[in-house]
Image 1 (cartoon, rainbow, N blue to C red):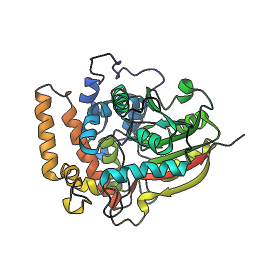
Image 2 (tube, one colour):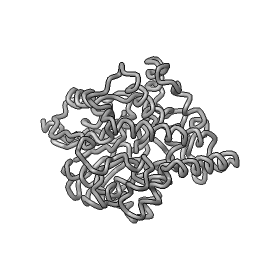
Image 3 (cartoon, one colour):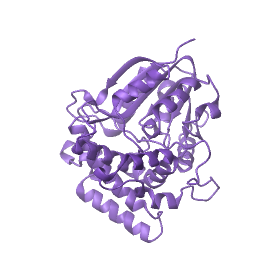
Length: 361
């Protein structure tokens, strides 16, 4: 669903890409869950500040361990979406990407930046949908290598490319006024500071350029002083590699503070959909929309999770996957429970849509 930024200086948690070598940091995977206290009541502001200061290592540790689990359970587009009755899972995922591209107004032959691109599923889909040229930026070397591999296999390397980079320092990599459009899908929630991240996005946009984002936010009725609300927030953070979950109001303020004009905003999760965005996480096979989706949703049933995690445990013992992958899988289970609870109680949204314009002058 989301991707990894970095500090200005390459983090010690990263392994440089070398032909034939594993790009993941095995020590970072093994130590990932130590960044949080398991008890949300004991996870202090100091611990949160430490995560924000070392966010590169935190997020890369998460994605080095979670990427292959994501691909196994979800595909190559790491995000949620809305569903219509009878709509297949991957069809809905693609439609969610098309909707963002349409709302952002992406035109053919324009230059587009995907901020926090994962393994490139959305970038490839949006390039096909719009005929634009898309560059994906992601600071996780393992994901970038997979994104380029999948793109070459799809025959899109002349239209879509991926580079390793830090979305807190986009100007250094791409220069001012470089892109006609920028979008981010459930990625910038990993930023330690929204204003600094959004300012980088504004600066790489050309004057009059548009930024479209699906942001992860705590909703307006979230109360940080409510222990139950705090437990849900904490579960989302530890289960998804997020140093700090913030509110819709904080997102809106950050965008306007850096100089964006908000053209449109809507919490798409707040629509009265008969099929809720979190249904695949519930593991209820009775809710699947097509026969093929039974296979995908089965993995989220209690039995499916047991089979998956026991398999990962065995592979870890045989040294076929990095040490700590099982722990990251357990964190993903924690996240699933927290995301479903947050969705049901309207405390969390993974699809707060903002469409913003950079002033022309």
